Image (cartoon, rainbow over all chains, first blue to last red; front, top):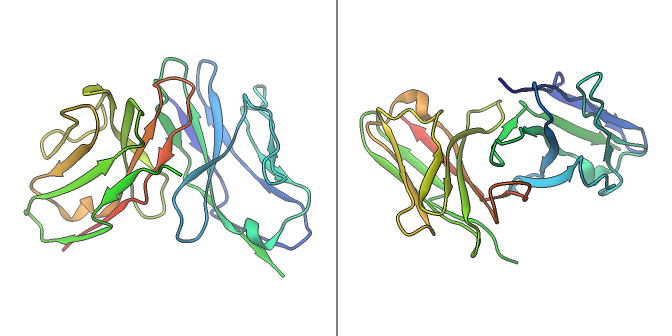
Length: 110
Length: 114
């Protein structure tokens, strides 16, 4: 069975502070990991995926297979980063089926 | 910019009544998904279509839920009869293919069963 765990429901940081949103997964094969974001009153959208190895809006995430983690990081939080962040996993042969974590609400305070 | 369209945005229905949701995916997207998101949780897949065929409905409560995508384009998700525990956000998503392609989500339909 595949499972995604996001231990923090809410993460509050000050503007300019570093951000780390935690994500751990459980999957027996080689998963594909994603971060989705939902800004206030907007639809869920893809932020980044591990195979792209990109930095999107200053965010990066590295897949650590040893620790089964895919934490999302940003060195300097901006007010516009305030949103709900979901970590998601797609298993090999899973046909793009996404298993989501419960989400972390990021609040960036001035 | 093409988007996944869903209707209605909000629906209030009484327990034991029937309710239906509609989704129009991005043009050209062969794969369509219905997710349910209960308050405080992440989305959970209910059913996945590849064109008009169901490829995964393992989490769909088939005694009361049904989904169809007759022409392989738009899709309808139905609940009959609705129960109080069905209150949730119902999200539709689509992707170009079934593997390694980004899924695009609609705004969702928020269902309240009273």
